[in-house]
Every structure is written in structure tokens, then in C-alpha cells.
Length: 269
Image (cartoon, rainbow, N blue to C red; front, side):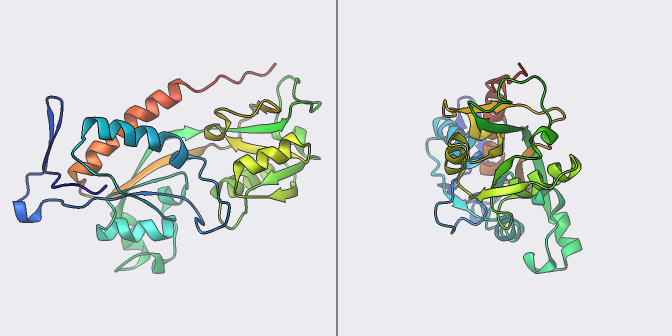
């Protein structure tokens, strides 16, 4: 968020005020959005960057029209040190790395890894559930309660394990269900992945954020037990929230509540 002297910006009767001396007042704040391996060709930004973030930006601009927002795409290994150094005021991510800050010491600016882990405050906005996607004509599309083991013999579509936390979460869920998935296709582009699902190449585990507006030749079903959801997180420097970051956090919470309330109910048939 690139703030124009964000020291006194109105939200109706509410004011966002920075009470530090004028020379120290925040002139620049930036929101980082996690997009792992953003340099990869064809990378799809489905997730927070393509769902709640545009809604939050629109709401923020409505409330604080004098503030110019600046958004940067960054991996956790990039954004965590920038949060600690003050270059970023906030990061939005679905990577659980932020909850453990389980990165090598080289990922942090100054000090060792153990000390650095104390410099990040993490707030969980909500959990994004994971569902199974299959062709609409799949034999299990109309079945009753399904679990992951029902698909143990299926070929799977999967994001690349090197860059996407969703794929690592999926593999752990498969191992917990007692099987090693057979991977037919890997892509970091969820729409492309769902295209292969629709064509009958395999099935896929996809987050709720991807299923909004899903194509009509793909069936989305819940699983029981449910796979681990992916967390939608906000990370901030510990000990201080800039006025801009505090205001954006409030907006993100409001937008998240609305997003959750509009989540479709996927019941077993």
C-alpha cells in the first residue's frame, strides 16, 4: 500500500491516524501477496490473490479514497525478511510456512533463524477447504459419502511439488489415507488442471476458492474425512501495525466473513 501521508484518512466518522512525529509518519506501506514461483510461465493466481484480495482492495479504496495501494507478489522466503525490515507492512498468503516460519536462517535479515521467528505476527483469516474434482460423468460423481481412499487407483492432477503448498498438503493427505497417488499431470494453473479433469485424464484436489464459478463439466464433491484445509493468512511485523496495515486488516476480515458466508454447501448425495 503506497500511502499519501497516511496520518489522517477518514472512514466515515472513523479516522485512521498516525500519531508519530510528522518526520516519522508512514509515507509508504506495501501489501505482499504470496504467489509461489510467480516467474513460472502460465502460473495461475487462483487463491487469495484472485478472490478476496480484489474485493478487499475495492472496499479499502471505497473507505480510504486518498490512499494509493501498491501490491507486490512474493514468495514467503522473500516477504518474511521484508516484513521484518519494514519494507512490507503486510503479507497475504495461503502458505502455512507463515505459521511456523520454518525457513532457513538465510531467509531472515539480521540475527539467526530462531530470533527471526519472533519477528512475525500471523493471523489466520479463515480455512479454505479442499474438495475433489472429477469429470461430471465419473462413476463416483453421484455416490454417497466419499473419502480420499475411494480415489486411490485414480490418476491425479497435481500442482508442482516444488512450488505449491497445495501439492504438499495433498500428498500428506494421500499418505494418511494409505496410498501413494499416481500423478498423471502436473500444473500450477488450476483452470488448466480442471480442463484435464473434464477431459477424463484424472481427478484433482482443489480449494474452495477455485470452485467458485466452476465449469459445468466438472463435479466437485466434499470428502469425509475432509483433507487438511489450506490456511488463508495475514502476516505482519510483530510489535507494530502501521495505520494502513491495521485498516487493511479490518477490511480483509470483513471481506473474509462475507466470502465464508457465501460458500456453497457441498453435500454428499
